[in-house]
Amino acid sequence: MIRTGTPKDITAVQEIAHISWNDTYQDIIPVNIQQSFLDKSYSVPMMEMRLKKTILLLAEHEGEPIGFANFTKLDDDGDAELIALYLKPEYQRNGYGKKLLDSGLAYLLDGSNLFVYVECENKKGRSFYEANGFEFVEEFEELFEGHPLQTAKYVYNLKAPAL
Image (cartoon, rainbow, N blue to C red; front, side):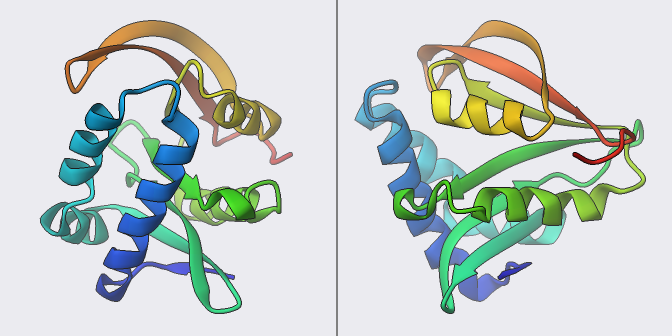
């Protein structure tokens, strides 16, 4: 089941973010850099702001939160960003990611483009987005918490017919 996140979900979202980040980025981003990012991005005040200003959706399995997706709302140009889509490793490749994505897209029906940024070595993430209709735009280097990373930018045309 997919549902809208509430303040009661903050702890579950923090847990899912930590588990999935450690699983995905263990050989890509140093642990201390991951921890610094997660501490800032998923702090209680930041989570409260996300709940107020963005679209936060939770995936549940048998009543337990197992994943989440976080989308910005549409801007004046009709664009939005998929900020995060994370699942606990044991629930990946079971359709929950697609359900989270589709549920988020339902909030963006009047939009033009949905952007997502993925670390280039995150092969699982890149494969997921490519399989779900995102088009590769460009790769660029950025400093992430002071650590150089190669990032891939993807776009999903919100006006195109769904796959």
